[in-house]
Image 1 (cartoon, rainbow, N blue to C red):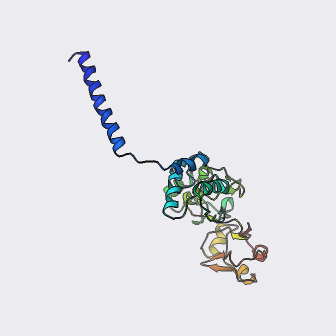
Image 2 (cartoon, rainbow, N blue to C red):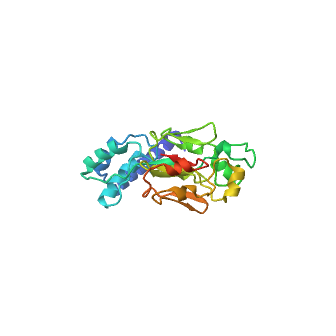
Image 3 (tube, one colour):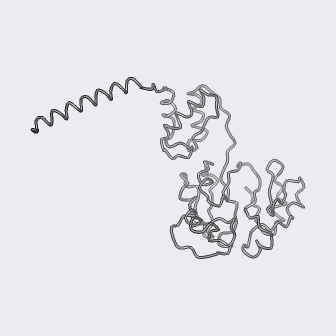
Length: 265
């Protein structure tokens, strides 16, 4: 076959394919809701994924769909209340704002918790747990301390402290929950920003075990429970638990805790 004939054949094939694509694109075209474009215009455009969608466009589509189906409206974590108010205006709604949440670390161990072995490898908590399900800390409830949460935070709200524990900046944390989902030990949790105190420990080991392996872990002594004037603190399965609905912020538990694992918000 000559070069001219080959080019002609390819051109004809291209024309047929192009015509077919045009036909099917018109035949099965889905008309885009103009509200999606309007919502997309007020979104930050960061495509950070903190909202749970892969892109800002994906969130815009989900928002409009949620309104039409009268379901819970997903929110832009990065844009906060300002962007949410603009979206409300575009869609002609007045959505109820959820109370702001931030991430909290439920562990005080870090360098104060004994090591089971010296880990050498990729600096990722998930890799440590993949290597050894029990982790490199003597406490199997402890923060692994290799900074996965800090690396994943899209708002730079988490840094790793000198004690090997993540430090959460409450003013930068948007409560997106990405760190909570990524933590293999589940020592990061979301809680309402207006809570008074929280327990920075996750261990359910008996007190005598905790004393041997960690300098600051809860030992289930029940001093907090016995001294709380509003019955807001109870030791459950060897761990102090504060009921935020009952807690008045009197700080007695904070002052009395001999292990200093109760922290003010």
